[in-house]
Image (cartoon, rainbow, N blue to C red; front, side):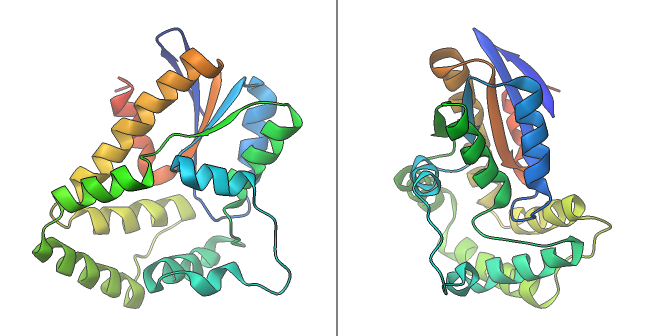
Length: 209
């Protein structure tokens, strides 16, 4: 958990390995310790809205619809502990926010904006290489000592594709800017729950060395 002073407020950043069931406890501890007045999630506004209205459907396996690379990531992540979808850390943030009557916002790029950024930064050649890297990760995922190291290694492999790093930096800058705005205009302190792979870039964008 990191506390970051921003213009007119404070952002409390909790970086999680999304999908890992154990991470929900870290979110709960941070929420109870800080009593935030707003919750920001490191997902798009559309994804945040979907989490807010999510209701489990009996007999439906959420892993069935995942692309191969995301499914492989989830399967390998199970080596470090139980995994669930939607990500338990995000669902716990939503649950706690509702119980405390605290607003929830998605801080990542809106989906249409993400598509525009991706199209402008990743060439046709880059897109082909992106697919090859993902297929390689499916067959030979990185070896890591723990879940966080695994998540960071997977992200680093993808970001070596030309253009992908710029896309992720754009996301991180947007998350930082949105978190500032949420803390200033919606409520402070604002609890920001985001993927561990986005932490360093968001902290940099927030001015934290």
